[in-house]
Each structure stands twice: as C-alpha cells, then as structure tokens.
Length: 343
Image (tube, rainbow, N blue to C red; front, side):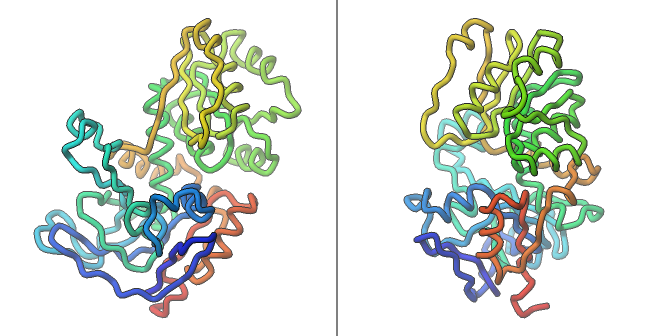
C-alpha cells in the first residue's frame, strides 16, 4: 500500500508500506479519504519537528471502511463505515481523572504523535472509532473531524438560538464554526479579508464583512442595535483578529479562542474588564462533538460539496499540499487508494 510521509526539510514522500495486522482491541481501516489539515501544513513547515517521529505518516481527518478486526473487538464488523476521533488518552493524568480526557496531559494525537491516516490501510484502537451512517458519503464524511472542532467551539461558547455570533476568520474552520453556529439558530456574520473566502461564505448563505473596506464598529453597532455580539470566535490567528473579536462583544459577551497563536498575542484587558467579558479556550473535541458533526453532515447543514475544493490521488500529495498552501483551495482531500495499484 501507499503512504504519504513527512521526512523533514519541508519534504513529503510517498512510499510503499506493509499494512499492520490488528492487535488485540484494534481494527484495520481501509482509508477512503483523508483531508489535509492546517496542522499538517505546520508539520510540513518544520514547526513540529520536535514532536513528530520521522518518517511521519500524516493525516487525521478521514473516513473509511473496517477491513479487519483484532481479538477482543466487539460491536464493530468488517464493512462498517467509520471515522476516527484521533485522540488516545492515558486515563490516569489529572485531566483524564477529572473527565477531560480529550485534553489529556499525555495525549497521543493520532497523525501527529503516532502514524496517521494518509495511507491506504490504517490500524487503530477500536475505542477511537466513530460510526458513520450508510447514507453519508465517505468523501463528505472526511470532514467529520474539522466539523467536530467547530461543534466543540460552538458548544464551549454555550451559543443559544437567536444570539449573534461574530466569526473572525473565514478559512475552513471559520466557515465550519459559522455553519455550526447557524445550525444552532444563531445570527452569524463572518469577518474575512480575502475576497475568495468571502465569496464562498456567501455562496454558503452566510453574511460577510470585509474589515479592510468597512467600519467594523459601525457595522456591529447597526447589526446589534448598539449592544454588540453575544459571542465572537477568533479563528484568524492574528493579533488584529483578537482585537476585532473583543471589540465586537456586548456586555458579558464571550470570546472563544479557536485559532492557535504560536506566540502570546496582546489582549485588551481593559475592554475585558469594562464589559465583564469572558474568554474561553476551545481545544479539539469530545465524542459528543463528533456525533453531532456526523449528524450535521448527514443532514446537509455542512455544505461539504462547496467546502471540498479538490480531491487528489495519494501519489500527488505534494501537489495537493502546495495547492492548499497557495490559498486557492478551502479543503483538499487525498484519495488514499487512487494510484496505489489496488483499483
């Protein structure tokens, strides 16, 4: 089978690998599609060399079919459609013992800390499996993991029907957050500098704002009748985005920090104090977020056809990464069997 691996120095290789047979409590997944994540780009850029073990099989946004099961596996059968919640927790650290195993102190994130799904055959513990309905295509189901991120962000915000949600950043996660917020019944606005991303958001049916050509403060005042947004989501990863997200909030508004900031950004603590604002961290997801993500995808609340820009064969993985880096694509999927000689 073929696998896409990161070997350091911004290089990807496609190699032949022998599938690993399942051990006790494990299953082998015939991987159909794997999405390229922003984290995968960070790995390619060398930002996580201290964490990954090279050659590293990338990928954690996936969907596929169970090909075989190991001893002790119950409730799963060959042929089941599945995705993976790629978090393996230790079970005994303070986070796990407090019921927060998704942010385990010793977390093994599959696709980062151990081999990922950008390969034709992937062996994983059965406890990370999430079932998929037969009515949901595997191509669309490959968006379950990033959709679960968005669902978790919205849940952490305690967003309620009728509230106003201000999403700063219209990249893949930003648009998924906006769609998840809309599904909750919120009034949503997406703030995005890039015109192609605004155009896509509008095709999805979302209201957009260009902060370079509009008075954001005046817009928010008119939109909220002077009150401010109930919730803002900072998805841009830029210091200016944090300021925009904070300034937009109403009294006792909540800002959810979605983006990963590689260096500590400045935060307007005076505004935080003056309006009694709340800043909420949101990292990865829990099982209920995955289940809700699958439901939203099955119902069509997530416009997968519009969000998936391209599907590339695994032997063209370098070109697929380059396309995503260029900013021309929203989501790029890798067909993990196309080109591996099995078709």
